[in-house]
Picture 1 (cartoon, chains in turn cyan, blue, orange, brown):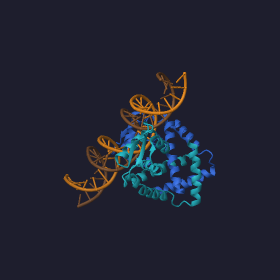
Picture 2 (cartoon, rainbow over the protein chains, first blue to last red):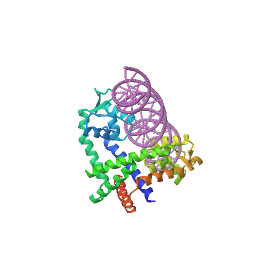
Picture 3 (cartoon, rainbow over the protein chains, first blue to last red):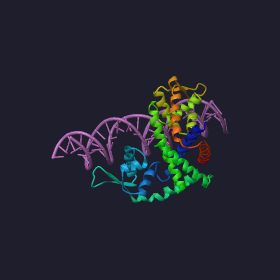
Picture 4 (cartoon, each protein chain N blue to C red):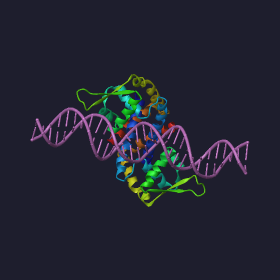
Length: 138
Length: 138
DNA sequence: AAGTTATAGTTAGGTCACTAATAATTTTAG
DNA sequence: CTAAAATTATTAGTGACCTAACTATAACTT
């Protein structure tokens, strides 16, 4: 059945993409997921953990643990907000900032591979359909 | 950039789909991933763990652990192959077989939601593009 | 027949992701 | 102004996923 096929394809693509990313990121000593958190900080440094939750679309304990792991690697530091002592803000270190270019390169590589042999028109259509699907999910 | 957008959309869709599945499956006392393993057995009972690895596209230890969890729930049983003592074959119990209909219902529900407002023609095109992407990944 | 190689599965240890329960702060409301 | 409610983050515990290192069995190889 068509719908089943689409679901299975999506499933395969997402799990395999994740696996492939993971291999690529291994060279940079990163795990899949960590790249995403760093990406948010590259766009806007000093985010709070709640802000990261929302942007990453995951739960608070997940962010706590990821932040812990990234801090251990020396890629970020945590600093208490001075006006609201509940809040922890996350800042990039130089090492964290320096990963932006190589990670982007890995992403681009993976993307290009994923979308090869798909024309520009098709990509635009694909984007539209995926946007519709995304909207359906929430 | 178009390609970045597509990657991000795929990422969002797959993680949110997974999350939503997980909630739906919670009612059946299943975790996301376990449904998939059961599905392979519904199609063909008595698979070996290696066969499950290949069909699920995951690693051997993952299957070991999932099988362990499903056995604890009483949904499957493990039986040694008599001709080749290295091999363990996995069989459904009645409880495992009885989950097929309810799980399929959850799947269908999720799928219909995901693809709502997408026409039949668009779905066929979508399938074609996803197939191309899948082929690109391996 | 004995030793090497290949195959099937497990164990150990790591990360991401979740829920539930908790602590420490604001903020809000009576 | 104080008690209740909301917010931010953590801890504990679970499971899916991974890699690396291991055991047990089977199949070659010479």
